[in-house]
Structures are given as C-alpha cells and as structure tokens.
Image 1 (cartoon, rainbow, N blue to C red):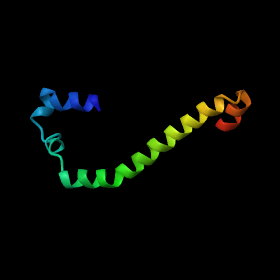
Image 2 (cartoon, one colour):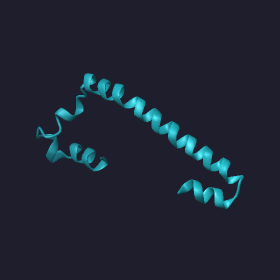
Image 3 (cartoon, one colour):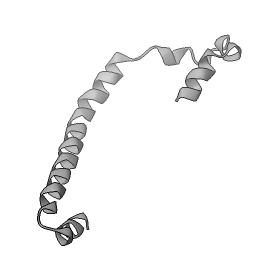
Length: 71
C-alpha cells in the first residue's frame, strides 16, 4: 500500500488520471462496510480473547492440558 501511495505522488503519475478517483471516498459504501463488518470483528475479538483466557486457565492444570487445548 505504501508503494502505491509513493507512486501516486511521483511526478510522472501526478499528471495522469490513474490515481485521481482513489482520493474521494464513497461514504455510503464505507458506511455499508462498517455496518456489515463490525459484528464479525466483535465476534473475532471475543473468540480470540476467550481462547487466550482458556489457554491461560488451562495452564494451571499442567502441560498436558495445554497440549490438549491447542489441538
């Protein structure tokens, strides 16, 4: 992504119309992405958090518990 940003500011591409439309965000599309994406992001956050907490709790039981939990 950084490469394309540098390319957009290069003097050769500055005069072309290649990167002109990229700088205008479509807010309706971004709102729709956010509306559809936040439940999935929340679900992923909760799953990863609970898995980590479970692994820490299983650590109190010993190495066999951790090995069986990660399988």
